[in-house]
Image 1 (cartoon, rainbow, N blue to C red):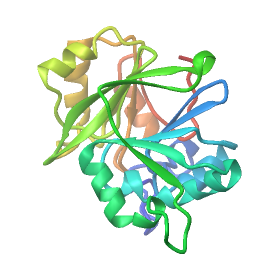
Image 2: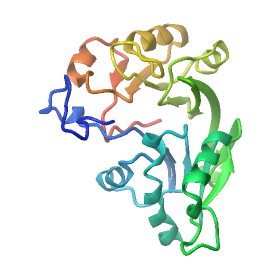
Image 3: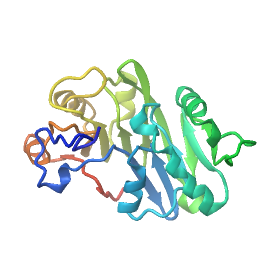
Image 4: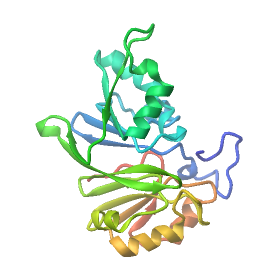
Length: 243
């Protein structure tokens, strides 16, 4: 829901700390001019403007929920700018959801030009030209009653919505430089990791650095930071990392 919520509720977060102002989570991976966006949050327009992002090369989706998909209309500007369709990648369930709910983005012959090419996600794939190539591995994780997709790239993993990791996935997540992982709140939740659950995962896979994302309004930045190991940090809007 972001912090503050749409009704102005900050929860336990100190509104004087800019790091507690949180839009719905997404991430941009850049190599040269190759800009890969993960998820189109409802806050996408403001995120792009605030971070001065002028172009998107491709889009990856984690799952079909509104907070990951409903900024999709803001991709239209990149079709108009580049005069070609933008490639998006998602699993079968998410592609079906997007095509059913935003059919005019994909189907020619309507009053609106189609702006997106839908691509079914593969386990291993690469995006970009030779010098700007980014290699990805996708993994299926549990997010309550549905699946969500995590992405591994450049010795980094991004898993924004998850409450369970299989032994197979834990093995794939070992020896990471950066682990960006869902941590919704202190208390348990049926479809997101809580802080204690994340810390248990970290004991298993031992990443060099961990970033906690998808933080709810009961997780004040400074209070949370004081409870974390030295190599674990809360995310904040505009955070940049050199991979």
